[in-house]
Length: 190
Image (cartoon, rainbow, N blue to C red; front, side):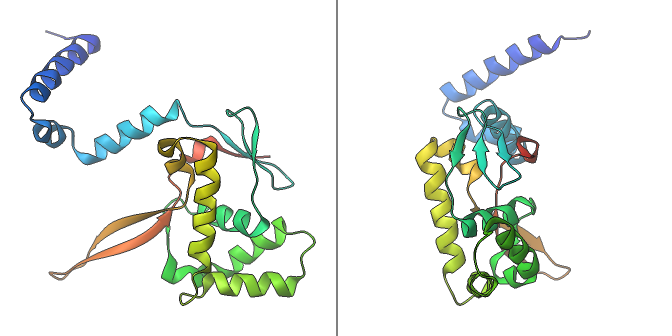
C-alpha cells in the first residue's frame, strides 16, 4: 500500500508530539540526526533570509530587507568577500595562505587608499599574533546584528565552526574554521 507524503507527515507529527509529551526529545534527535536537523534549520531560515547583492562598486545590499545597504569599511568588505569566496571555511592560523586574494579584495574595495597602507593592513590581518582579523569579524557581526534578528544574522556573520578531522592514527583532531553559513545561492554579484 502506498502512503501519501501528507499522511506520512501527519504520522510523523503525531509520533513527535507523543515523544515530546513523554519528555523524550533525545529519541527525536537520535531519529532525525544532526545533519538533517541542520538541513531543516537552513530550510526554515530560507524564508527569513535575504538575498545579498554585491554591486560593481562594492555596495552590499540586502534585497529582501527593503534594499538596505550594509555600511562597511573597505577592509571589512575585503574580509567578508574572502570568506564568501570560501564556503568551506578558513582556518585563521592559515590566513597567510590567502594573502594575495585578500589583498586583491581590499584593493578593489578601497579605490583611493594608498597601496602601502592596504598592504600594511593585510599584513596585520594575516598575522596570527595580531588580533586584527578577530576585530574585523566582530565588527561585521555587530553590523549584521543591528540589522536583523540573531538567528538570521548567524547566517551572514563570519562565525566559528569546529570540524572533526580523523587521521589514520588513533588521534582525533579538531579544525577550527571561520565560515559564513549563508547559502551561496542567496549571494549575487552584479
